[in-house]
Image (cartoon, rainbow, N blue to C red):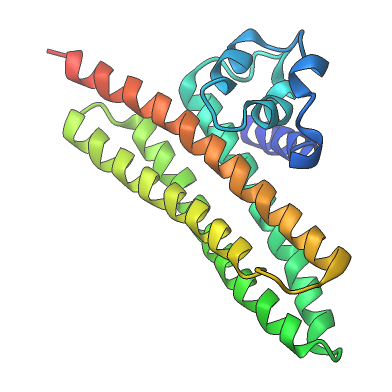
Length: 209
């Protein structure tokens, strides 16, 4: 039941994680959870971070860096899956149209987003293992795995953006780039939150006798 509730909350939060709407987030959510607000300040896109997570402001769902990281990565995964579904639809439409050149561009970008989905899924599974570890060397190994996969997911999203250098695709191009940019930004934020959690986890393990 707890996992289902978290999943539903992630979906609801993800609906508001739109980079084009993120700028005034701090002003709109000034009463949101202080812990989330302070945590988001370390990210590259703090307004977007707050906007994505502020729905938890009056709840007790997030009370630790581990839980915050889990939610942030889950939001990134959901946004990547949402973007992949949209691009699959666009690719099918372009394949049956006369815009064959655009189809290949979208197909290449789609391959990168597919990789991002896989890597974010792996990172979330690995994060659960990390949360259960107490041995410093094993903790470092799990940290390295999560960092590698999340960084790779971010790189793939950025590579996808590079697939649209100067082609004039009008509204379609702008929509795709906006969705992929959103994936890149929320993933960047999730990585920053993970780094904070990982550092605390590793320090705590090394202090144990």
